[in-house]
Image 1: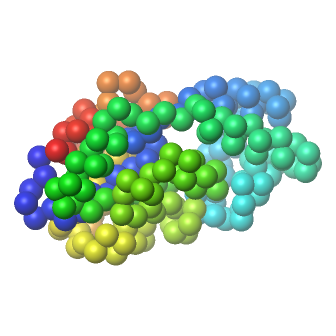
Image 2 (image 1 turned 90 degrees about the vertical axis):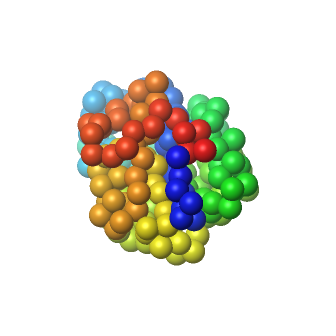
Length: 219
């Protein structure tokens, strides 16, 4: 599926390479805080951009901000408990799709440089390290470390620089159309991945980008 001029593949993390049992984590956190899950979801949305770009400084800062958005005082003991719950969840309830590693390895075998490009908070780096993704790709671009999140140009440009490719030499795979739009605006070819199992946040509207049912379609 990739053209001969393709030198790099930029690939999203959550709901593209891996999927998380987010509803389970959301319920555990809501119970620990003493709020409804809908209130916790709202707090995650309110703090989204700042968390994704490192605005709160640490995992503890992220959780303190979420507590404040829930109207709950960020007591240190409670913050520590929420960090523990989240870290424990990510240690066993995030699953790698079956086609992820074979595709990453297949792309590299074809001479295509690969990069993970993810919107995420401070909890993502330990997860990426635990899954040993750095051994499987040429670069890992996490918004919390880059300081810019998709669909802002900066994170795609940083990924292109990391793999030594121009926009017209790269492809980008994601499950969210808005993030695909950001890449396409720079001249990057885009693929909207729509897997058989719909992720928790949904796929977004299909139509503007070429659709694939799995990462192996890239090969």
